Length: 120
Image (cartoon, rainbow, N blue to C red):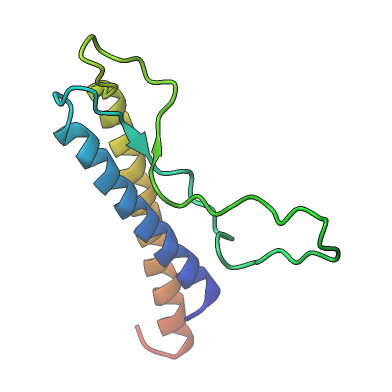
């Protein structure tokens, strides 16, 4: 698979995973002491370019943080819940746009590949 198509696929998977985290947040909007979480921003190079150390005393780099992270700056309700439905809606729209963008890039790449093969 060409690298641009792989990148678009990875971006779409990340957006879908982020939508899952957001849906979990919304589903638990009334759960006492539930902490809202979100995925870190999509990084195209995550997990692909391992850093090499020239000396054992050198730092190995930042650990891969691909799982959901608790939102630290979220204000808690009196019951301890940090889910803001307005914030989750905005995050959901942002994630949907990222997914649509990735699918559009994938489709354009596929159309270009088909055109280069003489198919349409």
